[in-house]
Length: 394
Image 1 (cartoon, helix red, strand yellow):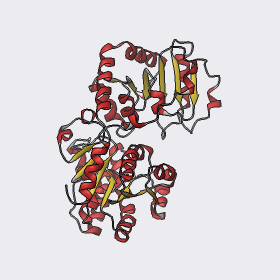
Image 2 (spheres, one colour):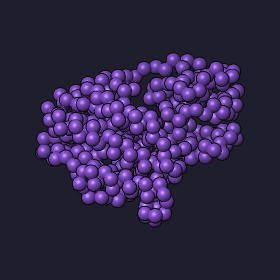
Image 3 (tube, helix red, strand yellow):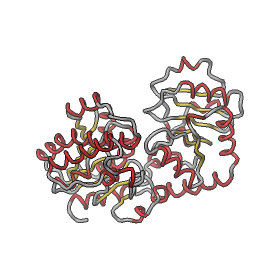
Image 4 (tube, one colour):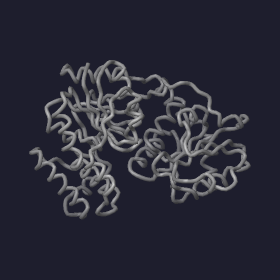
């Protein structure tokens, strides 16, 4: 039995994909402590892991952080580095007080890149999105002196390295966060890149096949019509005008539309809901996707993986961070199309759905990758490998 510390963030997209693996590890008799924010306590404990709440310092940072500028990549790097600077002291105290055999850290918010150089026990990097061999920006954008926010990133990085007496890496190394061992929550074919063939990367595939097969009561009125599922995830969902436009686009159509609007919009403010719509603040996504024909999505990594498991063509509307990379991968593999969220209207939304429902090649591609997802369930293999790593046998 191994004693393992799992370090994660306060984001659904980073925590949810890890939970099947955590449960698998716990079911095999391993003892796991899961360090994250309080809102995920119940989910974590359902896996059999013990929940460890964030430190007061980290809570305060999350409440008070303000970026020094708004450059998309530099702002993300600034947040990652400041987060690590605040998080590492508390985590290192935990490690000092507990005889952990292994640390698993979220690649962006669990500090594996730094921890691997600071401590002596095995460290695994947990990649909640694509595992990458390079940062998604050209090298010319990582040169000191070209942008004040980038220079601030280097200042934070150098401060961390001085404190822990470790070599100063490149910012791209911190972003990629490659450790000696890495876990990725998808299949190699969707991740792409040469990393997919590397023994340093452990791909879990999907755990959806283990879910209980339940009927979704929202489908009782679909009457054989094609189902369109609309969801922009669980974080950035305050888009009332978009939801109203979706209703205008598909009301009185031959489609049955299931729409999740998140907790930042009030359903009553939508006005009259068309008879062919089923709208809720939250929906059981994997259950809905099982009977969906087209998924209109923000291109979150986990949502797209779920959809591909069920072979659903995707209308992607990426907005931030890795969503643009995910949407591009979907398009490049012929699994869906990309829309511009700022330019979306009733015409291109309707036309995009019609294309996805009629394009035989996209449908065939989705069926093929669905088969690959269903055949590739390596949770138990990954868990067994992690156990060997924790014992120094790998």
